[in-house]
Image (cartoon, rainbow, N blue to C red):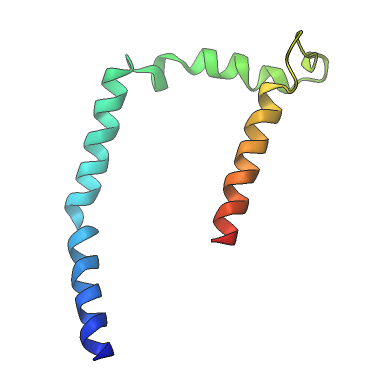
Length: 88
């Protein structure tokens, strides 16, 4: 009985994660890249200005009403995501 169940799961797995899935993911990536105006390519300067440059020692000043820097927010979010993945 368990072998039958595992065989069905293997069949579902083969269907869901076939080569067409990668084509679907690639299509979605192209769609969102076009819809965003090619921001992953054209926004490199903006991304670097707002992340890498903020890592320099003199740029850690917080503006009024701001409780954490963008870098602190990103690392906190990443730590929370990785931590939840480890718990799961």
